[in-house]
Amino acid sequence: MSALFILVIASLLVATGFLVAFIWSIKNNQYEDFKGSSWRALFEEK
Image 1: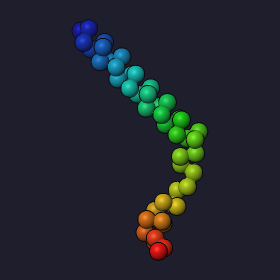
Image 2: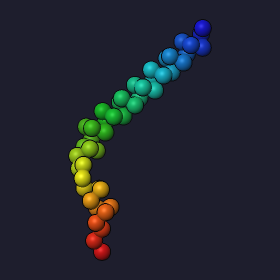
Image 3: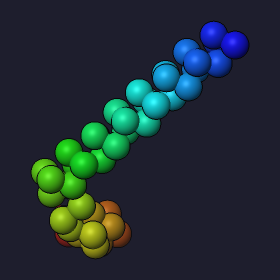
Image 4: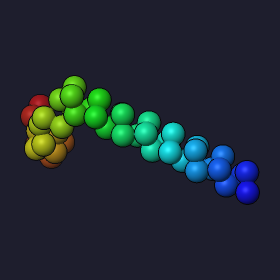
């Protein structure tokens, strides 16, 4: 039973870490340019 509590706490910590990382990436404008990278990958000018 104690292993279950440890696993629940560990999963909550991991989920909180992912949530913090997601919020940090939004605040640092990681999702600002939706089509730019895909168009640059397909139509690279030389």
